[in-house]
Length: 205
Image (cartoon, rainbow, N blue to C red; front, side):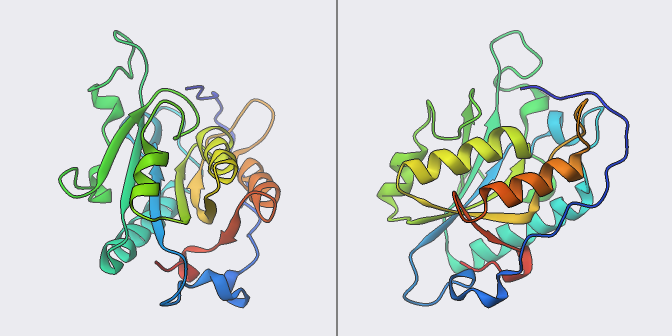
């Protein structure tokens, strides 16, 4: 996976519209069933040489989402990006391991590897969601412009309703754009056309 080098500091990402005014931002008893997907929150990306934008807040927000999903009994899925054998991110490499702070438990949560930007391509994710009766997929993680963006679009194309948590995904600076601008742009682009935008504080399962 590309990790663009940069040391520039990023401005704050533009906030997504608050979901508080949207009736679908909080799951009601008769709302479509939701699952949580955490994308690539792994050692080699999150703790790499290029620090993700607002990493502490994104980690804290992702932990909140996991806690809420677990409390509600919603399925939790966690994707890890891997490369070919012999690469730094070969399957089983320390760089592919999920952040322990997340509290993801492979015994009760579904942890899976992927090799493409889409969490659906070459994995069983679509089947697992269908078998669990999931209609809406809450998405958090990294990197915004790669796997988060691609997975949102793929989920919509497969008939699921993506729910992108605007303050729970992140990326690093690129040679052309600072990370905060990338995040703000993707929140604006994906929101509405491909995904429902919510803030962590408003997201329920």
